[in-house]
Amino acid sequence: MSAQVRRTAPLRIGAGASYAGDRIEPATDLAARGALDYLVYECLAERTIALAQLERLKDASKGYNELLEERFRQALPHCRRRGTRVITSMGAANPVGAARHTARIIDELGLAPMKAAAVVGDDVLAYCLEHRDTLQVMETGEPLSALAGEIVSANAYLGAEPLVEALRRGADVILTGRVADCSLFLAAMVHEFGWAFDDWERLGRGQAAGDMVECGAIVSGGYYADPRYKDVKDLANLGFPYLIVHPDGSSEVTKLEGTGGVINRAICTEHLLYEIHDLANYITPDVVVDFSDVRLDEVGEDRVRISGVRGKPRPDQLKVSIGVKEGWIGEGEITYAGLGCLNRARLAEEVVRERLRISGVQLQELRVDYIGLNSLHGEASLPPKEPPYEVRLRFAGRAATKRDAVRLGNEVETLVGKGPCSSSLPRQYVREVLAIYSCFVPRSAVRPEVVFAEPDK
Amino acid sequence: MKRFYLREIAHARAGDKGDTSNIGVIAYKAEYFPLVLAQVTPERVRAHFRGLVKGTITRYELPQLWAINLVLEQALGGGVTRSLSLDPHGKSYSALILTLPVEVDEAMAAELDKAGRQPI
Image 1 (cartoon, helix red, strand yellow):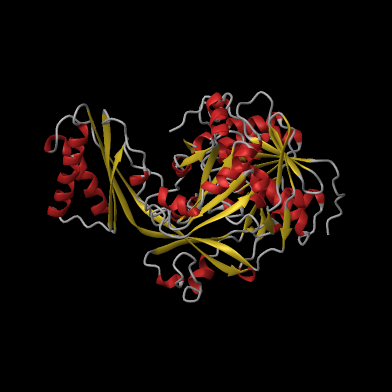
Image 2: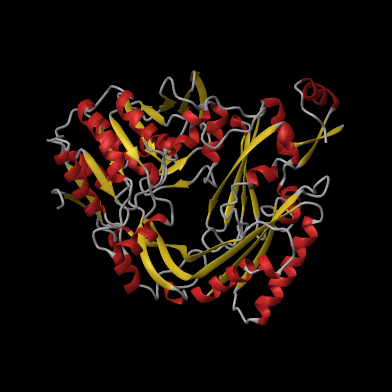
């Protein structure tokens, strides 16, 4: 086992990203001024890894985050100077490729002896295909083999254990695929404080801390502002959050001085409830977190303390996220303005519906929205006090073939010249549907490994 | 009693998992929380959402944070990845819940009025 001395000083962990395309400068600012021990970039939404897998199938050297180069060129020199270690899910569907690319950046910038390592083993596609008749899909209650579309990816949510191993073996930058978001942060705490993997109380508190910042600036004012009700200072210059974690697992969340945004009890409460259903049983691969008696206290400006969290034994199985190709979505939009615009939009809807019928476009579902009236909440929308001055008409349809999805957009496009008068230019979009399902596999089906990487090219 | 939008006494954020939406509703002040508990019930939420929620609605309570968490099943048009909605994650449901009317007693109404909050 590690001869590492257990840390007694608080640990500083920054949140450098909360999705694949997140802003880069605030993360660099954290690396430069945050006196961080760790910087974590969480970059995988549910669909991201399935899309990355499709990219990798086309080109074996791809399938990891496209902003890796820019993020690391900016941040790694600061990390090297401060001794900050980096943990990130930017590896997506190709953690080894991402680690080799990182090793090259380390080389080119002269940052030796920094070492990049990949954590692999989250890809369980082969296992799932082999057991497709017995694995049950959570959303449908039927076996995996009953899904109609082509299964393109299956990734298990790994916990902190393999990341801790990578840290113990001296990795400075860890590139992963699918790992539970908060476990990216937990790995740093377990490694530094020497927590046991059955110390449920501390693991629970650590996961709560990670959960508070894994969505990045969402907890520092990034999705909060509602003028006059919830004001956010200098939103354009929004700072990313960082954690100060204590050896007992309690923590504070805060942000750098001089950045925009806000961290208070209200926003932390919003974030805590976000995506958690049963607060007594928040399931992660490492521990089941119990938030029943959580306390959030403002202990300084833009600084909130998290306490009162408990933990319970981890689940026996791991959740797997499965990407399935399920046809195409076509969309077409056009805006009508001026007196009578709503009547013209309604006539346009009738015309398009009839033309879709005449030309035999096969759609599994068609949706028509009046943007500006009720496109998000339908009949539940508050009624307008007077007729709108303009309205945007939107058609969206799901089709088995790309051709039918395109034809829907075409029928909207031809409204200019063959529909009601006085409109904007139309726009149309087509995209492939990559549906996400989930199932559970036994832990024995998932065998994570740490791979230290040499520079590519 | 006076009627106000829920927005005047609480704020909200919505999250998603598959076809399930969850909405955290948080009172701005401790004294507003009993009103949230009494009036933001699963039954009222279902009626207010006018057919958007096809499955069950469960409410979890966190009194120490003046908050409730509403979990709405079959509420995202078949799931985030298949939905044809412009808001497949239902993130704007946080704004919809805040249009729920709530009944406020005269003392609280006077306080809200002083803070520049208008009744419906």
